[in-house]
Length: 403
Ligand code: ADP
Ligand code: ASP
Ligand code: MG
Image 1: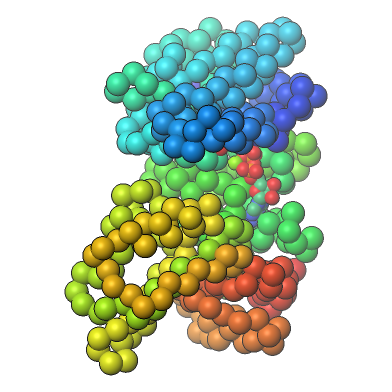
Image 2 (image 1 turned 180 degrees about the horizontal axis):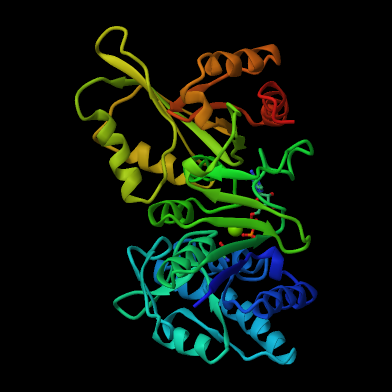
């Protein structure tokens, strides 16, 4: 069977008018004799709204109830799409996760798709039907609804492509593809024709919201090519694929930046084995995601300073946890909101010396102070004041010839 998986994001199904357009796109694949599986996200704003309301019910809203609540947005969008296709004369119906079922493992809010039952969907495809399936959600072994992390419909699409051995997996979104940096932040951003899983994974993890990181990991593991393209414009998009398929001589492929980060520093921490574990264990038990971590070399062998970054929404919780932690001693605790992480990403830096220097010099020329640095084989990240992030993005984009 010639199967294609099409995923539509929140803005693509954000209004009734846009849903009609989505139905036209789906119909165009059907006319090309594809068996079409559609994965939809919720209409834009719906998931955020539900989360906001849950906070009004309780500042400690149950995780399991959170999942059943926020998964409801996808149900609505799927029924609208199926309804429009039926209106156009096609055979279509919506499926929510437990009806398939899409089986997940792992915790509420952050489950992973483990298995998808193909039987009913295959039968429906053979009958000429177009199944419209809720992204972002699944059902666990206790028969309860789960969700798979914000932006998770991307991962739903990849897993459908995997289980149904789809020939194509197309992510339809509100931009024309993956750009060198967020095109909504920098006008000079350029569309990337092809990008490797590794680079896309770094870009996504470092703030490029266009693809959810888990989905890229799943695609890489299963060698699934992904096309990212616009729901509004009939233009070619970006292919996310394996490294050996790509021909590029660029050193840097893209630049990502984060919003809402905060920096936490513990000054004068008693330096003894196990101290870092004592600091981070309670944070991890409270599902606080710690990002950049730097520990200074202890000058006197007794005390050290430790700095790390978290999402600003976790700042108050983090403060409380550290202040109540009886297992650590420190002299001073410093918090800094409004920092931003800027990262340059590219496999080209493996073989090109001097990239780190060029990045630091560019920032120095703009008088931008670097607070924390972290690197991997294919990325360099720096933490700077958020007010400088646009300036940093613009100058680095130019320096590495991405304009
Ligand atoms: P969807 O609702 O379709 O899933 P998202 O809002 O999750 O769409 O992702 C698309 C958005 O990602 C774009 O509107 C854009 O602002 C943002 N974005 C961030 N970095 C990039 C990038 N490097 N390339 C393209 N888009 C990016
Ligand atoms: N609707 C979900 C969210 O807003 C899933 C998605 O958009 O992919 O996170
Ligand atoms: Mg998304």
